[in-house]
Length: 129
Image (cartoon, rainbow, N blue to C red; front, side, top):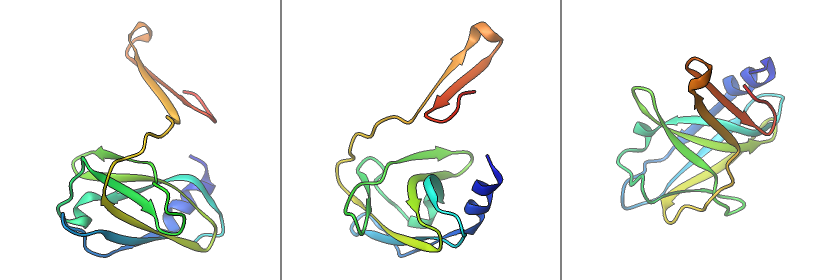
């Protein structure tokens, strides 16, 4: 990860309004840095939202009304990972609601490579490891 991306992640912040099974949650994600965030991943602890139906969760960009790609991650705590673009010194508002999740194009491919002594290989549109 470059220093530019580290700085951007440090300056991102979010505020939440409560989310339950019966109602929608709205929150704002701010980019306080001088750099635009293009297709960056924002990580939010799922515990911040209260009980939600993760099987029918839809994340909507409030302004464009389009779904935002997301996935869950678990490393001792369940997290919601959002793929967002936010201009420098701007914010976006995101709504969480129930619905049918769109199919999004995969941006990364990874696989376990046992023929190379327990290696894991992955690539995206910018780099490969």
